Image (cartoon, rainbow, N blue to C red):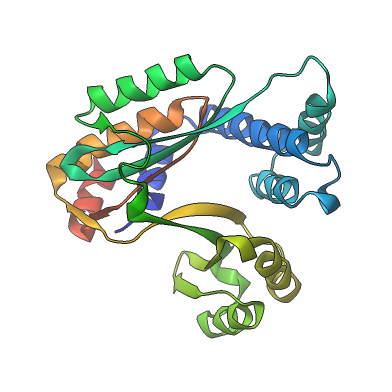
Length: 249
């Protein structure tokens, strides 16, 4: 299993659903506020805000919460969030990218560094692992959105680069700069997506054994539990056998 979606599934089983829901809403609201502050508060005129709202709705975030986050961006006394990216290595030599929105860089840097140190990783300088990833757009759909062939055809017509389909759903990949337009065309063909977001796609994968994967899971969990952290990405690849053991633990 590659990427960190499967790890997230495990973490959701281990954590309390309401606590996770609260964290997710907080992170989504922060992205909505930042997007609205950096551009127009009108999502039709602000592609980043439009994507943020779409992802918030995909997580069933109440409309009132979304509107409150937009209004917060327009307030003179609203917090100012900085976009920060951290790069480093996790257990097993896994390259990791951590993105955050923070109103206190020192606090966030300290928390991220502490998590890496606690779980056998180490933060690096900016650019230390970034060259191992490509910035691309990712659009996900549930399995019931259509057959693999139907989604592939829609993705090709929309100008996407790749589609991966399995029993869990469909993941469409496109160029980062084409994300908004590809998402718009896919929505016209398939309906609303589960998520539309820019991601860091590893160029090469690093195989991870059970021991390293166990510690890596803890690191990813600790990072994603931090209110400032928005995304955590690694270039790890874990065998199905190890994933089954971790899922059963």
